Length: 154
Image (cartoon, rainbow, N blue to C red; front, side, top):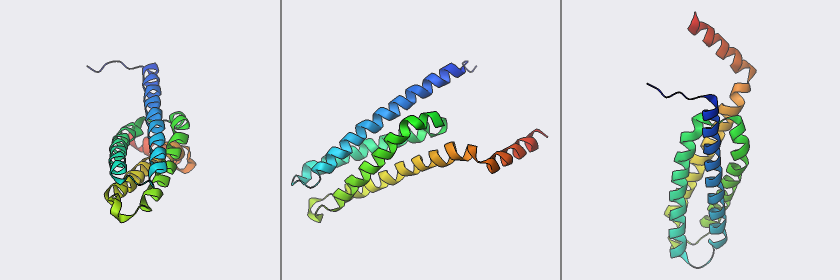
């Protein structure tokens, strides 16, 4: 038997999910900005460890964001979208700073991993905008969906 879930429960869960994602984004943005400031200082061993930890956290964040993708609403995105775009910009700036580090620093593997994380997070962000926000508002898509719905019920 499935538990009864009313719209208030769904809204409350989405609000909690939005708050969790927002907090993760803020935390990761602060860390990536701090790493960017330290990227050119002569402590490559510490920077490698810090970037490795950041990449691990970005891996986890990507999973969290990917899982939330299906339930994110336009209202949710109004809350998390600006933070998510800021995180992506900050990560891109960190990536640029890391690419400037000398090859001898040993940062290349973590820098490449950072690039993959940026790409993955950017892709989910773009999918949310395209498919969860813009597509449902597209008049042609609405017509197509109405035709599909009629065909399914015929």
